[in-house]
Image 1 (cartoon, rainbow over the protein chains, first blue to last red):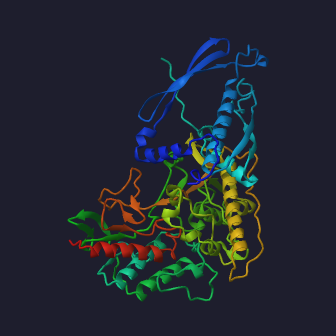
Image 2 (cartoon, rainbow over the protein chains, first blue to last red):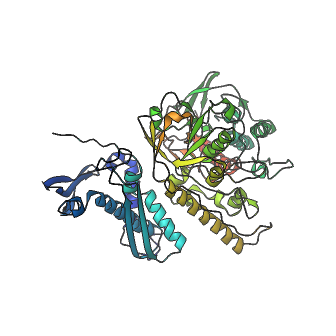
Image 3 (tube, one colour):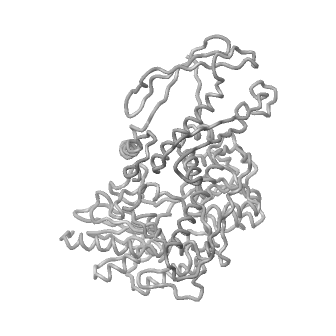
Length: 186
Length: 406
């Protein structure tokens, strides 16, 4: 492994991740995770969500603390703009997932990162959500992420980091592939 | 020995050298899969000079060519005769199970008991078909590469080929050339040029030592054993067949087939990244070849370094296909071995044989040859059989020598 004999430190404990992979291949039931969030309507299009607990490694787990998120819509939508738009959370989810992946892959490949910046844009025709054109989908037509990365590596190695990060990204998979969604009412 | 393909025959050669009494049981004829489970136009992906088995090499006049299936069959058949392998043809194994300190092998021609059994039954017995195939509209004719023979046997109309490794790209090309519009769903793949700096890519992989890399030298063995077969075709012109070549012929590339809902295929938005990954990986390999040329004195003339155009992908590839347009779908989504007759607790939860480089885990005296990356990167190639067969035979002889008897 390149990790043990190189001085690079991106703050990712890759050895722990590799050990976890080896352990979970032999205990696949422990690899089954459930991620959770709860959301409460605050008024208008404003809602407040929290994440604390999740399930994995065969038992209940929790974050160090509860994280909260306000979501709303901007004033051009005649909303009060108490927080980011839900589709912006999707963009944040993708960019932060890919960026975590870049760091982990770089650590595994012995590449020191100095700075990693991503800008992300998602194009959308809002006639879809407004019901103004049945041919137009509600979601993004196209998402574009641009990375600026300063690392002790060649341009090709940096491109390979970003490509590998996409290959192993949960959010990239969620966005690029279909997922069954069930919404029930108690 | 179960299976009289190139891998089984190579083991038979080394067993005979050590005077170890054995029989090679074959359900059909020598080289059976090459006879009956391959499409008509297929040629080997490895050049003729690389077609060698223990003690026998290629002696024809076209070392840089690629064997057709009849030529492969003749080569392997000739080898069986040359080594006078004790092959029992048309003998189908229905069960292998532990028995005493050895194994009981039940066939339709009688029962054998043996202290050791070597499984050389091939790695491509069954087609892997994704579960989403069950949602295909019934009007679309569904074929695996094991059933596909030639374009003329397909219905007229558009064809969807799922999978863009060696099998998928070759079938996509010839079906498209027959006048049928072809759409190719592209997942993870390995891109290679057929010829680089004037030499076949297999020449480089052999010369740089890549094909000799052993299982115990590889960081990620799970990945190495599951790498899709590279996008290569064997043709007299030594053509490169990559996605750009297919696009220029008019084949349409779409993303991985991710789902089917109400007769519409949902295609993954990962196409650009998967093509980018394959381009980057190919360039890394070519870089390492150039580095090898710079650092070594070669006994052959080689051309100048070259780089190949990135894979062209539409700016916005389609994400959905109306499947009612298609008359045929071909599932070029990989193959797996058949172990339905193996009655021993040696498979993992995904039905794969647990083994340590050919020694089956928890089953002393049971061996496997002829799988991808079994002991070396070349393990599944014809010329890769020799080193693996020698190693396995050494181990088997040691095991028998330790006094194990039925």
